[in-house]
Picture (cartoon, rainbow, N blue to C red):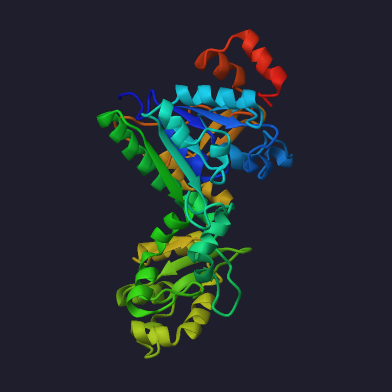
Length: 404
């Protein structure tokens, strides 16, 4: 095996919350030295959100934060004081990549924006990620992934047609943007390798989110149709949805796209006669009687153990899967086989389970090198070993409030 894919890459990570930290985590887990800049005066929002170890809140007890910041170093730095901004400059001069996710204009107000930095470091690669990009009438509107998902149309599409929008789970665009950001960074680093020149990457969560709605957007552009909420139904599958099983709040999702799958579903559920019923014999007839069909299937699935039903349907060639809980995921045999779950020793939380790397590089595999850092855990190491500050200078920085 060779070195990790990003071995030797140096990253100054000023980002926070979701998109930026998840993106730089890919770099860190694959060998880059990533210095996460934080401050006790304004800690990352994720440090304040559950789940907390043993249910006890604390800046260093959130696994929400920890799961997205493995293999990084934490530098506590107060950018509101001049001394803190001087350290930030020194960190940027050390780095190959700078990442930030503040509201547009924030880095410029500190004199740390790309035009300022590139004058001194024309080879720097800098990425800014925010709600709607760095330019335009709405650029300075701050927010989180829920808002970008709403702007992008996801809330109009998610839920039941006779009810208010439900929305997808969580800050949706926070989790779909990082692959775009990583691909852009890799392209910019390749350009830098070939030319010696850096680039500025302006990533909009709003615009990234639209990429996942291509068919609906094209349908409107070509046919004038506006997509809206349809519950669990699908225009190309029937039946399609989640159906109740035995146990408390247990469900199996299934999708039938062919008549062959439909007949197999009927056999598994013990109702082969449904396949001959004129109301259900074809896809179009099933669509016309979809509400009745869903009621019949739900009644038939209620007595099944969800995992037994999934296995029976899959064996019969019907696409089906248990709607798994988090506890199910930790027992999932496929994830176990892949070694997905990784236990790391956290500075305050102790042994804690983390999500593993979602993709495998055969020649340069990554790994979670260490648990996420406690806030400011690596401040002295970064200042002394990476940036060359003396003990006296570090003491002066501390006295100035720059390291809060």
